[in-house]
Length: 186
Image 1 (cartoon, rainbow, N blue to C red):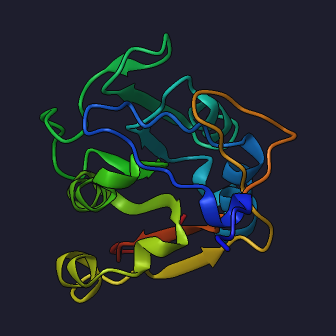
Image 2 (tube, rainbow, N blue to C red):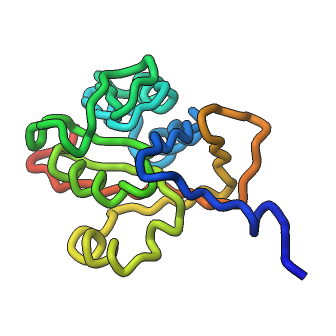
């Protein structure tokens, strides 16, 4: 008999042209700043959220950072419409790039963000993001995350909306790459 539990049956396969809109609950973004990054330190820094969707993560980041720039490849009524992978961002043009990227493009987002960010990159991703020979060869072998913060509780994300009552069997984590900076940290 087939196991038909939600945890086993739930599959998240998005078409290639899908906006992959799974908004991040604000508490999950606050967890990054409050428990992993130094919230007092980021208050003088800039941040780019390149997959902002309707702005849930970007608005939360703005509670902490001096300046947050927001963009998305699709029109959601928040942030500029720009494709992060194609837009000509300058190298080291923002202190941090923090995002919940489309899962199928997460590797490309990390590589691009490493070029753009001066201090660091943080992505919220399914824990299975670590389970790939291709990502190991493409990212982790030469640039492993400096921090990996697995959520101890599940982060329910529902396509196209926030839902405080949602549940999930999917594990999520923050993967953080902190770049070495010269001179004392402010």
